[in-house]
Amino acid sequence: MKLLTATNSTQGFRDNDFDWCVEGELVHIGVVCARDTGDPDGGCGCGRSFAGLNSHRATTTAMVRDVPGFTGADYVLALRSSLEQQGCDPSHAEHEAALLRCLVRDWPVGAIVERRLDEIVVRQVVR
Ligand SMILES: [Zn+2]
Image (cartoon, rainbow, N blue to C red; front, side, top):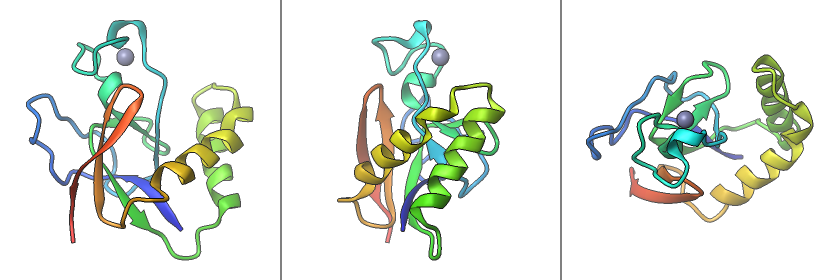
């Protein structure tokens, strides 16, 4: 299935890009803190970044990758354990998995996306 993963591809396209994630790890869309509310180019960076499920770090660039053998149940499990590790409520995992699957559904594999607060837009498609 198609999944949203961390990538350093297209880093530097924006002056304030950063990538502290592990290449290829699953990412989700984290909550934006008070500092970046209303400004995707804010001082914190969370308004323009995705959060790595394993590293618990952030990246401004994510890529749609097809991971064969990965199931919807795996996705929920991955999100749940990441939320638990970070002391967050794991009951959101199923909802988040559904949202992320819906998000990438119409994008091709290789699409590189960026975040502008609540909007996730395609930056480039790598073939
Ligand atoms: Zn923040």
